Image (cartoon, rainbow, N blue to C red; front, side):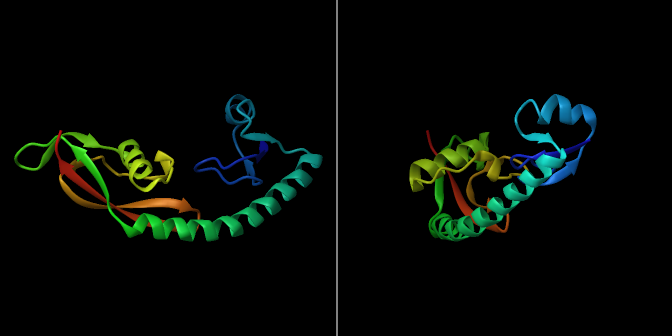
Length: 149
């Protein structure tokens, strides 16, 4: 089944892309949630318009992403967590906690899904974390986990 994506779907494509998916995935997930529409002849013309708008928006947002990258890389973000004497945390620091710390300390709202962690942070100290802020641009966020509470 061919569908046209209305918005970006991870591991599938971006808005305006025409992709081939299994019938069940298209009919039961993508179309009902408004993520995609069936690729009819008229809709293919709409997809071209969606892609053109996306390209124009991407150029504009790339400049915004570069300024956001500079802000994120300028200063470290401090996260306070309970830790033992050996420096291991009692819990862990995940991407949700990091996103909240960035919002409270830097005033920048980040989607937690843009902060990919292989594993949550479980030790005190400085950590460098990549943040996807644009399809072509990744910022490196310095997170300093300190003991407290």
